[in-house]
Image (tube, rainbow, N blue to C red; front, side, top):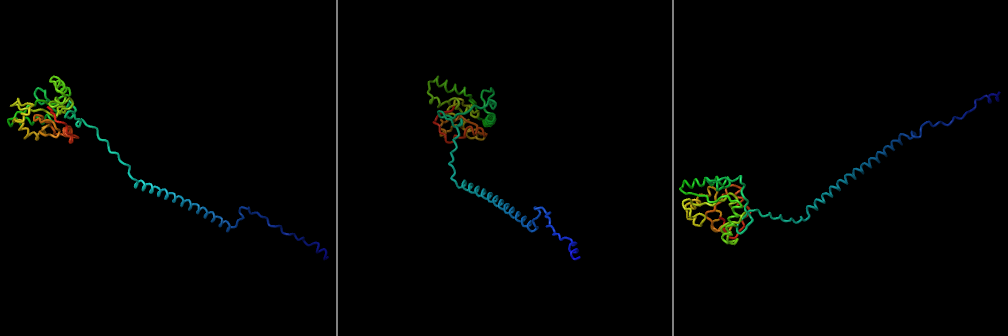
Length: 271
């Protein structure tokens, strides 16, 4: 009976080892996961900080290098400056046999100051001359225009043709007539004036003894006329009391005065 009881007891079965259903990837404990994430963040943050530091350092270095270059440029000795080339001579500074060169006035700028139209001046000079002659006439003085605008061809005849006719050399002829291209008459601002009451003094130094000359001395400046070649003139041209020029606008001033203050041509004449 005891044997039967013993034999009828249920066999003792050992419990099987527990199965491992959790994937390896998920076996990390929460503590281990937290530590790993923190490490990753720290590493990433460190790298980012290093990158920022490197970037800032690069910017500061570039800025500093630029400052150094600017300072070097500022303290460097400036390169020597070459003097500006002197301007080429204008017609007014071109001197030949004591006469300055002048361009011809535009034909469109010329108007007659005589009834027959044979003597002309630029518009501004013509207007001033008419007013001056009218004022002189009211004072009993007769101003007579002898010569006004001349072309280069006109002056060529007066200089070369007459020079050949009289057997004069170049310098001798230049004392009484400017070479073509070198007469104030080309400008349309200059004219020769005589006294209608004493025509024998025309184009002569004796013109200074006339009432016309004395009137011009006292009144011509009111009409912007001036004697071109007074006694002892800076240009060195012979005294010509009959030769007057208009200097009453900016173009006439530039024509006669610009860039010629220090020029001293040899003495000659400009009829």
